[in-house]
Length: 72
Length: 519
Image (cartoon, rainbow over all chains, first blue to last red; front, side):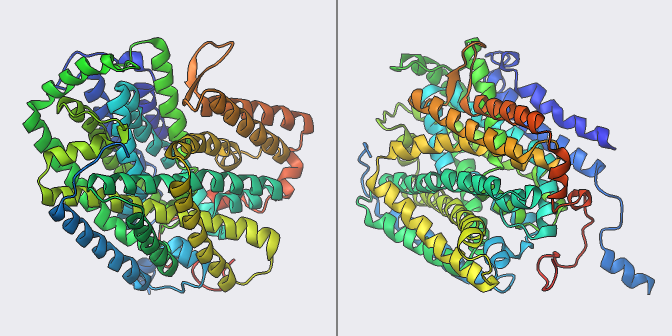
């Protein structure tokens, strides 16, 4: 389960080495690569974080109060 | 203020109407999610019961300040790509916070910690270290509040309102509802602020490029104009030096952001770890917005507008592009955007002062009611101080101090964040490391005329000063820990237990801190 956390390293790898993306081409919708590449990491990082959140969430029933109520 | 904008009656009317709306909300907020506002948990942390949605609005409204929305486009307007580091910065901050903040939330909730310094005191049982953390927070927060005022000033200038009294009135109103409602006020106002900001930016990035001939033309104009500046800018970071500066600024700023008292206050006010974690995957929506906002700097260039003060880049663009009524909406969005962080920051500073100065040194046995009363009064004093700052000192002073704020806050990382994971460091190591980091960081920044990056001798790279200072801080802390070899002793004096940091399961019951008699 803990291995899922490694996914969170990806945005750091993708963004902290600017020579990787400091170029003008390929352009997208008039945006130089430098700009749209970084914008693309926004939803990507959000999705990765959400995935890790789902996969590392504790499994116990969330509404302890309700569960107890049903049993009695 | 170098530009003179004409007064626009319609825009001013819309602006005032929206301002009035949030004023009413600020006072009504006292009755929202009702709690005993005579307790610091309630006044200063909203009873720790905000859910996912409120936390999203509050944190978003709090971290992405009005000053950010003025200063980042201004920086992009002035230097080009270098200013865009704000995007990777605010991308990386959320995975970092996702890892760290739930642990801090858990231990704070368990032991009723309200500030980072509370936690450090419990963890290390060291008054000196806790005071150092509190001092850093107060020092970094004051100029940040002042900058929110600068944000309001810029917007008022854009509306053609001259003089100091409107700013004083706006701040007096803010002070009054923060005093009565505590953290509930900015949480409620954030709903309005965030809606207005989103509306403004979405309209701006659809409408303005259509008038300027599309994104191609905007980037093209920037590419042509930036190299012609007195200090040439560029559309892309070209040199290896620029690359290192870009990456270290992004990483260092991301590491520092959640150490700020106003960020911690908003995190601790949420209902559960689950709320904190879920939010870290939802908050990047704000990052996207900031990135788009940054590009407004290029639009100002493409529109052929010349401004002498970079801070006027966005107001000048809005005045040029928008019809009067929408100009009122856009400027209200930014001005109200200043109120939310200013309120949270003053509450955070008040919490720090009350818990870690007043209760620590002046009245150790003060009651809950006295504690909350002191915090309320302190929130007023902090704002008066910030106002005096803006009215009597040059703006550049607040900007330089804000830059130093990031350097300073990062020096608390070992004692606050690393301590969440390991007991290895000795408290004296952390304290001396902090002193070294603070002094070295301040000295480097000052000797650089407050440029954010420094050419590191020996290594020969140009890196963000805060990270250089943090490296020194950690080296010193490590050496002293090895010399003192104090691991065992640190354990005995630690009031927190391993299980206090663990993932808790969310229940529908109130947070353990709210009920009476729970320690």
